Length: 609
Image 1 (cartoon, rainbow, N blue to C red):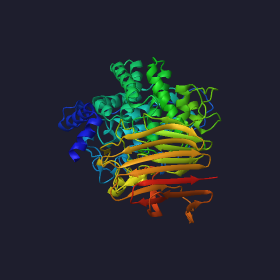
Image 2 (image 1 turned 120 degrees about the vertical axis):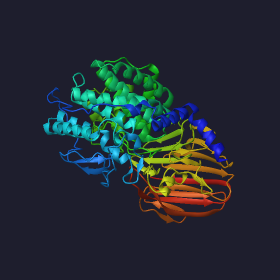
Image 3 (image 1 turned 30 degrees about the horizontal axis):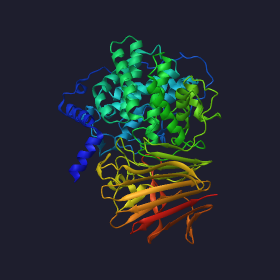
């Protein structure tokens, strides 16, 4: 049975993608991929110079002056002295032999844990911050910027050490260096050291680009963007390979938008945060294209990216910029040009809306406007209409809006690999409050129980059958036997409110059909379940607070939850669960668990004033 599931999953992933990935791994391991033969000199000198920019009334963000933020959340003390590029900044543990060739370094070194903790400081978020501070008149920030870049180059010689291991990490550095050039108005006249640094990064990205495309995720969008941005920059400087890199980047950007973004704006990774990573990447591409007066991308590319911007806008609440903790969330965040919180998606939404829709998402002035100012963009007077109820069927999302409240039903439309077993999960928001919530990710390298819990069915607002996930886990990042929607009734309006229905049947012939009815002050969810062997457990992951029982109600101030069934309810209790709103961080949350042992219908009513 497991072999059949693996074969079916391989077909779903795409045979061509599997061949690309296999050829890459064999090529690197056996040495016939040209990436192992790369050589380059370490750039030296000034990467950015002073007094090249015009005067502007710009206020720089405060981050990276005395404290940086790891994964945009954990404080990290900084000074003029560069950090250790090969240490885990949260624990201080250092990678053993960081001078090794990058392909000899494991992803999960036991000394430092998750390699993402090594990579974080080398994503060059601080490059943007120091460029902004220098542009705002702080000459010491420009000095620190050049000193840190020189130190980084000395301790990360070309293609040696952990920070050369991933082409996407190299791509993020290219994009951030280019945007720093925009901020400091040095795009047309970059220093030789900066051009050399860009070129050696593109040399690293090019030989493994097919592997990035095989992932069908933001690896491909990032690396295509770096080739386009860096290649066009070098082409303008007359460097020989610039034109070839530009053409490759443009080709893959067109390809990725067509393949990975649906017509409704849904992205292949089914994740709010990864969607932002993709959207910020395409925003940087468009800003760069405009700065260099390069030809426009195709109409289809622009339509897909505009749809992606609309998707992010619809999912983001305007009160605090937060949104559902949907799908994988590993702390990734690009283009940090403001002091906004990690979970505030409004700066990205505003920038993408202006670039691709020609309108503001948020009419009032706020922190979300700072990227526009730093990138020299003029915000139009046109304002997008407020998000309304909508189905994004290609991605499997039904959004129900009623005044200040939103509900999001997640149903399985897996054209790409799912990262979480979250079929029929439901999120509920009241302004900036997440009343019914998703667990998030926590960590890619942690204890087995957490690796199982956070992506698993038990960490979502859905029903788990017979103590198993909705899909079997085949590896750390891969589920098999992807469930499919077998029942779907589109969004409609009745006298009771807005209604949508979705359901699936799994390999064991278990059926779960969920109907959501949404009206002012009331969310009614009807779950019909059949076919399970021993038990079905309904979970509602609640907003932390003083929940207590009042007769047959669970209450928290003016909010109440009531669950009834047409079959006997064996157990109904409030237990402790976990959520991770930030990578490497977990907090307890109350979870209402309702267990039944017979098929039938469970009805949940969540009420608020």
